[in-house]
Length: 147
Image 1 (cartoon, one colour):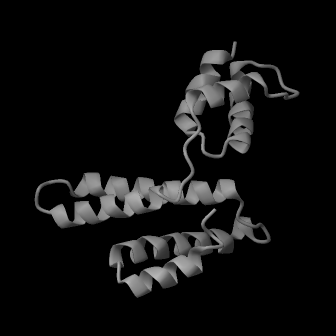
Image 2 (cartoon, helix red, strand yellow):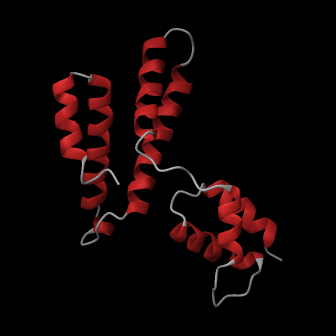
């Protein structure tokens, strides 16, 4: 995804002078480094699914910051946070559709009984197959289709 291109993107952005984009890319780099150095991730490599998860969390954080600062007094902060969220969204792949998630659910082959008690197993497998699937939507589809 973006991890391999990140040093080049940061260098190009530094040359262009776009401070907001540079800050967003540096935030991604920091988040990747934090993930790699976390005790539970030692020896693991960042997969596409992990990259998507990290960048998605950053987008959500920037959008949340914009909501919190949207009181009319901090318009500049709101605009900056929304711009950073938009920049990072441009690096994310298109999210999985409801139809793709439902199709994945119908075609999963697991050795567990399709009951609500095993819902987490189904959600985890769908997220493995479709890393861009929204967790809440996936949960709703799985819950609707389990006995």
